[in-house]
Image 1: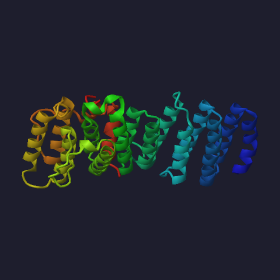
Image 2: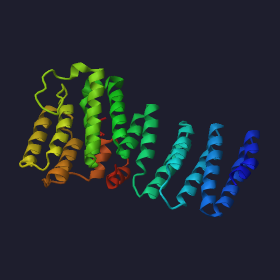
Image 3: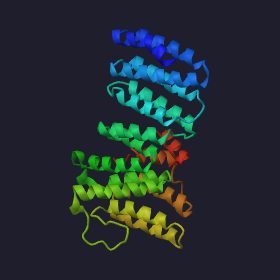
Image 4: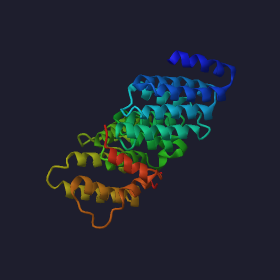
Length: 328
């Protein structure tokens, strides 16, 4: 069935009749989809082949339209995407141009459909990580950060650490305080209750720091599991994780309060309102500390900490639980 459909479509693509190929593909896919489950799978393959060809020919409008038809056909299977289908989606996203809105349209469709298919409100982590890594390679750090955080995978946390170090070293930002980027990552994962991701991120961030600026690491290291640096902010980011790992011990709530108070006096970044609000939220989430006053809606806190990322998206990441403005 697939070969028969392609025999009537490929000549149109080869001759440059992209509109004709687009229309014939739409008709053929609809016909195939009516032939049971096997027909639906065949329609998906047809749509993938044609959309790939259109995108390779820089026919962005038609290519994205057929790509979204493929995603819609995958959704009609009413089952989680197969690995092959995920690979189809990421390959098509990678073929899209970054110079227009077409890729964003395809990305939004892919995330929305994968969210429903896998019952993960933020979208499938593999799709999110691929998108984040794509933007990272293009040096679109702000956009990449959003998707890598949403992915909440150890691999995405590793990519984020590498990206943050590059970001920190650009435009003389390192001389401000490299720790702001470490804190940015740790708070993002911790507030989403992704502790393992926070640990992975921090370890890799320290590796990147050791490679790029070894003099930042202090010679004396009196604390097990903590790599002390010249940045109070980076030290605080590590100690947040250390406290959470000891959240079941006695007096940990008071230790947390003392830690926050100490570093608010040591780091101007820790003393900012977004970080103060985030610390209050952490106290509530991990140490059963009732806030003295409203610590702010978590969506608003994350929106500020992540440089204005949409609050709705951050809330979805928190709900998924799979696996920073003034910090800019």
